[in-house]
Length: 497
Image (cartoon, rainbow, N blue to C red; front, side):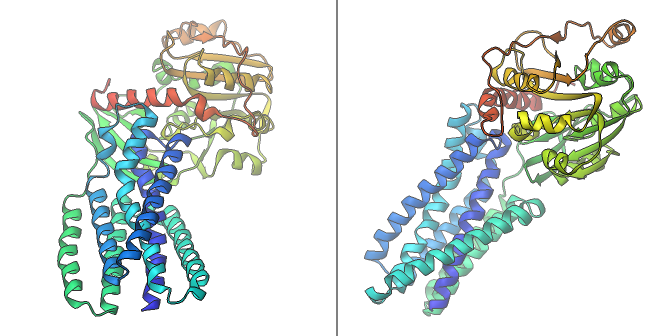
């Protein structure tokens, strides 16, 4: 019997951590994966576990039996069935609320019930295992250790293997079946055959109900979903509407590519106000570029039209698979974090493009003074660094990144895709030599709708200097992320193409 109790402790720890990761992923499509969302997920999980520990201790003192333990495990499994059947739809109920409030309500709705019940398991096990006061420390310490080891196992297995390969629904099914199995095993050990049969008879329909009413993908209005996968950094979708395909991560569009007519030709990006295509106009002699954040490969295909050989770095292998299958990605791609790649790489480039707004979160470590100094080491003497950001020229996040660039590069040119101060794309070009668009370049760009009014100055007085020691870019841009997410959701319902 004692062995079964230790196994239950291990499984409870495994399930707690695996479910916490799954719960966070359920929030990501609508609320992203920023520090605020993770803070809410962790705080909600700890609060639920605290309530479970306290409640479990009370119950353990009044009803210390294996039947009580089995009932708690059974209820935990049923709550997991509910999350499996409804979890993807719960965040949509709160999507119109402010980011923190909406994420908090969603986290409470998804996480609390299963984690309270799972938190009750350990105190009940302690009461069942302790026979004498002299063994209290050994039993409590042992259960904490086994539960923690289970948590390590659940975290590692779920984060590194299960989420990328199984997806959230199948992981939840595994947790449901496993939790029911340990409940049944505990009852079998104490020969409670009638109760065991009842748990099986009730539990199997619950599993079948969860399978039948599995939460499907959220509606996307007029857009059709060609593919959905769980990537390392969010929920990835390939969407299509009227001859145009889009790659979305956590509900935010990453790339939109036309698949009709001539496809990608010179001027396509500029006409669409994507000014990465200005690189060959700022640097006509550029022949080699590094693209950090490949996405669907739109920038690679465009720059290749000007004779640039593009090398890609993408952190999520699932993005590369989707881009290859649905967007004809042909660039040579290294799977790595952008900054870690620059540390190891020995090559120099005429242009480095940082386009890493995956799922709405700017990776802070790529936008610090130290990161820009590292990037500068990989640029040729007149090389150019290009950064695409979401914001507007007066926003504190844009001003902070610009000020940080000015600490490394003497020449900065900002190009905006909008007119007023609405959320838009802002492209920052940085170099050690002058950045000019004049003469025949302006005439050619005019054919694509580029008037020169898109060039703008950014006032960095009073802006924050971003460093490895103190960045805060995620917090500075949190309102922009929320606004961009709302715009993406609206665009999914009413596409402009």
